[in-house]
Amino acid sequence: MLTKFIIAGVVYLAILIFLVRRTRVKEKTTSNYLLGGGNIGFVIGLFTTAATLFSAFTVVGMPDFFRTHGIGAWIFLAVSDAMMVYGLIRVGEILRRKARKLDFKGMSGLMATTYNNKLAGYVAFGGAVVFLIPYIAVQISGISIFLNAAFPDAVPVWAWSTLIVAIMIIYSETGGLRAIMYNDTLQGILLFITIWIIGWNCIDHFGSIESMFEKVAVAKNELLSTPGPKGLFTPQFFIISAIAIICLPFTQPQISTRVVIMKSSSALRKMAIGLGVVAILIILPTMFMGMYGAVLYPEATTQEFIGQVLLYDQASGVAALGLVGLIAAAISTSDSQIFALGSELRSLLHIADKKAISITRIFILIFGVLALVFSIVSTEHLVLLARTSFTGTAMMAPMILVGILSSRKLTRLMPLSTLLALVTFILAKIGIVPSKIGSLEIEILLFAFLALSAFVELIVFDKKNQDQSRP
Image 1: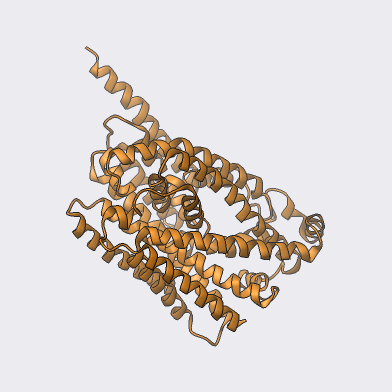
Image 2 (image 1 turned 90 degrees about the vertical axis):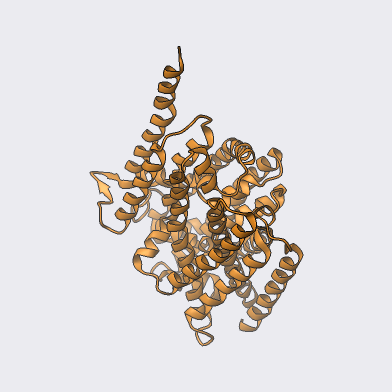
């Protein structure tokens, strides 16, 4: 398999080099370097957005999630994705119009402008850094550990991590956002093909989908219903997860940037609908892989199970393709997120464009190095923080949505409330404050607090301003 992996890896790198040479920009400006020219069609928009959403952890994490907790989340995921698509179409168009009117450079800068104070921009930028860097780090670490397990005598784990980060930084620094988007398209297609080949092989092992579920019922019937064998699928879990998924297009800067730079409203709608379809088609085979593991490897560790389903139970050519697909997914998602952090920083800089781009490129390197260091020395708390990345960034959703939807002068209420919620959420995750109050999860309480703050900002303060403006 090593020979086939090397061949597939060389081919993939060659395609990357071709794409970066084809998309490389000579004069780096905010528009062509950080925003990809600001005019992308729905096909590239669809694949680049899907690739930033579905990372290597989709392939590594979702099968084990289904194997451990069952299929109870399947309908919930479908409904949440449909709601995300609806929100992306309705709010996304408002965001596009507002962003283009206000010379969009990043969501942090947009928040600073709409709230007319820097605190909103700093909160948006700080939240993105705090929750995305650990997620990137753990993703890099996970793939490096997996590669080390596949080739134990090749290089140590830290060397795999360094190689992945080096490719990411070189590619991002050289080609900019447009090169990343083309890489996303390549990665998305590769991931889609690979995951369906493996998923189909898992079904084929049982003979049919019906036979697969019959075997799962015999092995552990609790996997086929809620709340699952470990009781994870509670109403609070579904509510918190749904909010995180629905808000992704506006709270994850690498996605919101892609929404803004779609070339037309029609392209945005097509991209959003396509994204919902792709989401279902990507997650579905991971469920087949999880049910396969529930029958054949119920007691295996996550690493042992993933090693079996992706490598040892597959033909050598498929296994090699799977490994390259995992690396491609890790690189594509991680460099999109690191690059987005650089763009967010630039949006807060009010200096000459050329100087701002130079500073941004330096910080893209710094963010990459930070992710590498965290991936090598990651602790339990970092892993926990990475697993709750989407929920953490979702805490910024009320502030961001108020900034997008409101056309009047806003107060500091939402930035201050969001900062308080983010700090409380982090303290709860590292065990300093309780993660539950009574029977309610801290996330539910924080989302309720932020929703109340948004209501006060949009309704109460607006009514007060209207009353004061009357003669």
